[in-house]
Image (cartoon, rainbow, N blue to C red; front, side):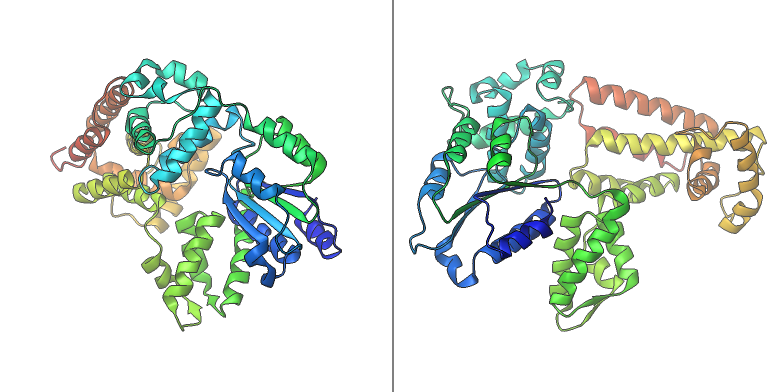
Length: 452
């Protein structure tokens, strides 16, 4: 069932008692919900006929009360429950942990709601984790509970979220029954005539009884993550509608800058576009300089700045980029991976240069010279099966160009030593309570030292 078919049926008066819209594309889900509500319920009737509830916090009792109570004015009534967790299963635990991490700094209430959902699904209780009790769960045990999550950074968020929940009086009752079974019975029994329930969820386990019952008694619409090839086109279509609504246009160069900063991720791109529309005011055209002013620095920007500063031995820039990545919440092991990759490429570049299999290249060499003199030699190496995944010669030519050009700044013995240092840092991060920021900072200070 497509959204267009649903809207066409609604216009004919064919209204299902229940709609479930779920998936990873939150922006598309919200747009679809708006269209459904606009088709079912005239704007004049929404003050008394539309009821919004947050699924992460609304109890089953309150949802049931809204669903089962007929409209006061006798017309249509819509109960919208956003971000319900009723369809989550143990397969959703890693997703919930990630949401807790993302919200614990800026939205503690939301993080706490996700944590309560996590406890219910994991079969854990607050006393299992209170104080230092969480340390009794080893990384191996945690990985069995939360498949797909290493658990190595639990000390950063787990004690904090437990304390937040305790101070807010949130807990999981040991006699809590499965709310999804109660919800299933509610839907199966049927809603009062004229009442319509709309549910949204980030994910849904199709094996759950409640999912099957809603599928049988209502309509389910899935908004899976848009494939990479279609992401840019999907964003352009959604953005064009928003721009036209406000009488705005965007220059082609601005599209490229926005896409680079947001990765064409729909929800973030549209949020940033709304800010840009407000920023330009009466001006009708959004330019690339507006993007640079309004849209914050992305992780991709900071990663590029870090690796570029490392290769350039620019100590101040490297430390600033590291701080930016840590402030953005990027995991220290991911940062370590990016640094290790850069050192590995520099080492491989040094080996290629010393082997004599490619022409000598100076740091001042230009890309045109590289294309003319180095690319053909790399082609011969590829034929000799050196073009392997993860090896420098298998990367984009511009990556190879930068590595060969920057390798001149590092003696071969220094690169070997730095690679050994990174292995030791990796060991310390995974087996001790060392401060990740301090370890990475000390490494960058050493790697960028002009004395090496």
